[in-house]
Image (tube, rainbow, N blue to C red):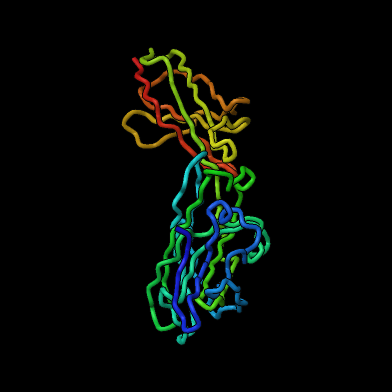
Length: 283
């Protein structure tokens, strides 16, 4: 469910809707303040003031790139620290916080934003410090992500209380978001006589977040690597480029038993990937 907390007050029921927007909008919001409001029982909005809290020590996906497939939902762990006034009521019925990632110059007015479905779970380290963890879901399902969004995003945090006071804090670190890649390798013939030619074919493809399918990745440098049977280390034999359809094909001379694979180092938009090694028995 979306982040949502309900509290009762003397003046009536207040609904705290931190990040409470539909999933598709949450991933493609154009305003950082779209749902950061509180409402009284009669539906009238109250003005929000800046909440005196500070986010720090943000870590998204343990510092690694977020790699998203063609039609998937990736659970991204986030940890952060939140410092607040000792007088602030941080109980669950009054206070909520959570992470988001965004594109654009401003965290409060991003061009694109992905926010956590649920508030962070926090543990008090002192009377003024909370250590929190949350899960951010990055979805390529629906229309939330475009291929052009495979860039480096920024991290941010939001905190809100029942009366509508809130804090949006950006520039909490960089988060590379990458399209997942797939790579295959097939070495033939098997077995083969020593000194004969081995042909190694394969294909490099990557996730298309708009068609929700994988498509060939053209014109990319890919290494053909070999691991001798009994060894744990691959060495590069040669580097070739993918065709217009992402296909790979090259030849080598058979020498000893071992495994051939293709290896792709990745690009700014696409994650690195290694094919599964294909064993060749040399007679």
